[in-house]
Image (cartoon, rainbow, N blue to C red):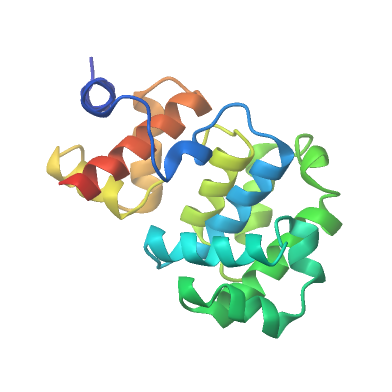
Length: 202
């Protein structure tokens, strides 16, 4: 077994099924409403800790703003104040609205996105202002069940710790993970979540 396959077995034995903040993101299957929540949280979680993301999410829920349509219909200043706990709230307000507009208006909504090939959808997400590879892949993997492995700081640290390779760029590590384990979105979701859980635990 290669190191990454062994890592998955080790983390699964240690932590079991991803819990806590991952209960929704790793839930299978998800309702359309749950997918929309993951999409919204994928922006809120940029450069923020999860507790602050939860505060912003709770503010949205209390205000009855729980869908992509709700985000678009909410006045910009009001939305900014509601998501303020997540930090960089003005940037994130703009990014949220752009992303919701893209999914609802350009793509025709969550259901129609199924017909867009993963590489094409990823390229379109990356063309949106403020959406880099990590956020795009969060959305692809956790909201749209596409087998695309997410690379974040915890994954990078784990790769260095295990001396998995000499190059640690996003693309190099993503290629390594995707070639080392079976191409399956369930496996990718759980392994990525477990790496983050272990990184925070350690």
